[in-house]
Amino acid sequence: MLLLSFLLLLSPLVHATTTIYDTPGTHVYNIPANTLYLDVCLQGAAGAGGNGNTGGNNGAGGGGGAGMVECERIPVGSATNATIVVGAKGTPGGSAGSNGGNGAETTFAIGTQTMRASAGGGGLGGGASGGAGGGAAGTANAAGNTGGSSTASGWNWVLSLTGSNGGAACTAGNSPGVLATALYTRPGSGGGGCTGNNPGGAGGACQGTINVGGNVGTGNTTYTGGGGGGASYYADGGHAAGANNLTATPGDKGSGGGGGYGGSAGWGFGAAGGDGYATVTPVG
Image 1 (cartoon, helix red, strand yellow):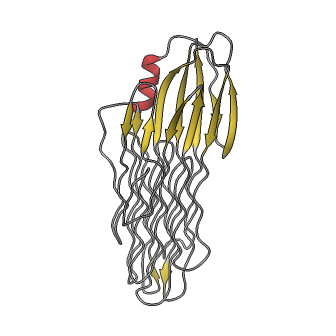
Image 2 (tube, rainbow, N blue to C red; image 1 turned 180 degrees about the vertical axis):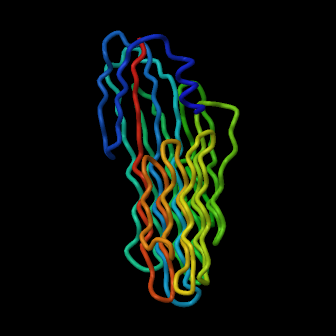
Image 3 (cartoon, helix red, strand yellow; image 1 turned 30 degrees about the vertical axis):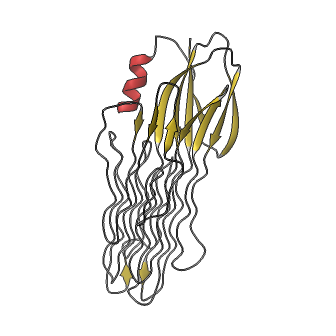
């Protein structure tokens, strides 16, 4: 994978212990003695899938978008600790046709500087038309809910990052192409839920990885399929609900949750997105 290759090329031959943070909330990392740099990877949390609906066109919910990943080598200087805030996943709404909640960004702060990995947006709930998939990583997108901040601020560069738009109704989410830099990667966006007892759209894949978006929910004479969740750097997207499976699958490690089914027989909840994720490795 691009990010892993980047870090391996930079890392000297030292035996270091990588600390993983996968629980939402604030964590303090105590920097080991004689550490010169920290290799840090952050994954923003993902959006939840939208809920399906019944009646009308039986619209299904769109899948949630995945969060951004950013990796950097950070000089320690005189600092003795750093603060990591792991973003919490987006959760589904409580009623028919509710939008999925947005994820929250994951951050790493040392001294006066903060590194950020933005979050994915939630999929829209189904209505007369299917719910659009959530945009990935800060996309202000009329088709899907807006994610978190789209600016990633680092020590070596500052770049405005635009995630992929969520898929429209019945349409697959976007799978960004591989970019020139290995410092960050763009995740997949959620696929759109469909209408009229048709299948939804698949979630988008994550660039530069083998991770794929969630499967579509299938449709039949009773059920309309939801959209799959977008894939993150660390995990596949959550699968959508439909006639093949009436329970949408949640995301994991920053991937989007699947969208809920719609249909004449009832509707289903979208699934939660994946929480954020962070790793810190000292370099002597």
